[in-house]
Length: 232
Length: 197
Image (cartoon, rainbow over the protein chains, first blue to last red):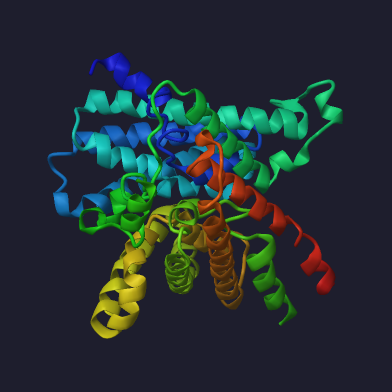
């Protein structure tokens, strides 16, 4: 796989949010306005880039058995750094992202990329992968935020849009709107996506937490066996 | 006492972790297919939330704040939760095998559940006392339980429904979640009016 493909797969083909369905919590929570979405996307991308580079550089040193705790410590360290930077230089963003900034630690995308990509590939490839995945995450967030802000609040990046501002569908900026827009977006991608959509079973293959779970090899969690049978 | 009831009820209904704060969406979508696994997962979450708060709250108050180490909060909390979950699993396996059998599967998944880290950090941010923090964790856990159980009922109805091809699987689940969350919007303002401060 060449470098360009490695970057672009994160944008569309393996978009972490819309295709792999990782990191749903921050996606739903911070996509109420475009500015928040860009801030969240940038913060997560920085953490992802740093953690992918360091984990890939240390991939021969970290013992296999304790790799997940090691990754979590590294990621938490980078998140703390980003948190302090945002607090110092963009206090308004810190206010609006609130709890979701420290929660980047448990964002499935970051741990998932560490486990699936960074511990098997070179530093350069991991960095490119991180940039692609980060850009894909930001892209999906901005797409959702645009829909929710334009129709729910009648503004775009804070600028009022003439007719829409008088006809707000405010429910879109609230919690139900988040689920709704996300559902519709995924349905559209299933419908118009070039590749055949894989049936999303919520077994270990589709489970964002499989990386940290450790039960993937012994049947996975509870109902996934039956789920697969009933899906097929 | 009234304050505790208000915290409990608003954590369960108004600021429901899953449906209005978007914390713990992964297990909400992933494990809610069947009622028994939904119950097992949420009981494990309630359990871990309470223990995590009981441990992280004193750490913050007596260790981090006096030493001006508040910036280490994120690292310390996630490590404590991860270690705690492992410990709980070992203890349950050794002493209460029956409980381990029903909750054990879900415990490793909980380490990366953002609801647990979220509740411990929010307890600090809100400036609760220890008792209030414990009540808030209980309420948050119960709210998670309520959302999971309700949603597993909704999903069992979707299973048999005839829906457009591109909506099958995740999209229809998300739209059902949207409607479930819509119903929780109705609780807004109820608690404030029940207990006027």
